[in-house]
Image (cartoon, rainbow, N blue to C red; front, side):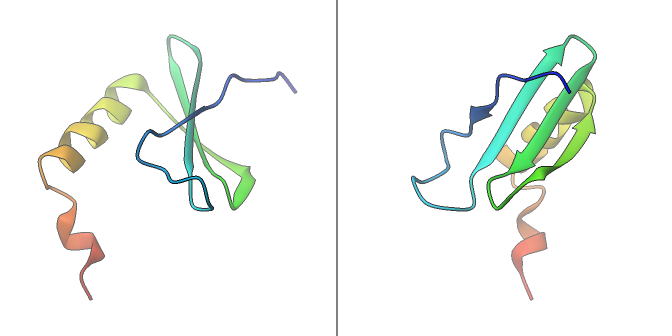
Length: 66
């Protein structure tokens, strides 16, 4: 398996629950969470960009509510 350069989110603390991202090529973005580093989600840069924009705009705020 190829080694990827993983970058930690600037919003992640020094403890657990950190989000890491890797873009090994122009067509792929990989995401993993520090508690389960062997579980990797793969998406496209466009979809990832849309997710980030939606989160910044508050479009996902309802997901944290019970």
